Length: 259
Image (cartoon, rainbow, N blue to C red; front, side, top):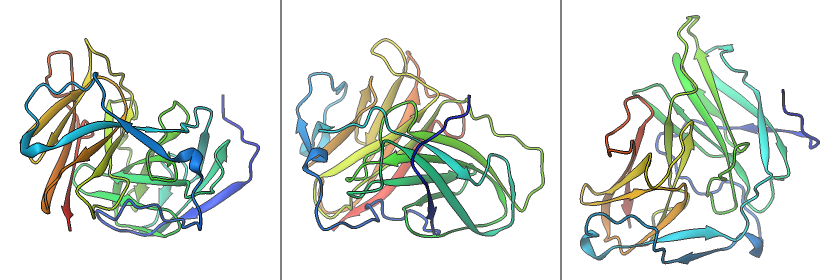
């Protein structure tokens, strides 16, 4: 059944930016204290290999998780034929007003190229068939983790083909929600079409090809102690035998630099 929302549609326009900053685009003079978070050491972190270089990894727990928040992507529609160039997106939200830095993020991929977009800008896309994952983020840029806070669509840009992307395949999209200006960063990711458990599927997190750990639940982490310079974060979906799932969207990585 199609979701209906009581709030007005909000037109959100984006612009192209490969590996764009994931800092919240909507600025506010004050931030609601209800969305501040605490970080606590967790006994459930599956640190199955030694943490390298003196890093500390802890859970990041928002004080407000918005379990009833939801949204619908109004435009563009799934598999709509679009011309290359500026693409406009609009959304309808429920129980999640765009205040205190709340935003919609987009991860747009076609298997080889990756684009990450923030709010209040415009998106320019070239010719091709793209997967678009839209998801809600709180005031710190951390993704909401409920069944109604994400939506997948296929974008046919200048290509009138019958190619169809399987929207039910397991997917993971890496989200680094804050600027990498300090030695501490938040590592967040979007999960779709897969569940995690201690005896089942997990997310394998790698840092600089040295630190590796397995996550059996969907959560955001804070990594402390990164040295200045270039770093790499990699997340992968693995099965109960720690074997990587096959598929274009079962892994994601990001290079960044600590100033």
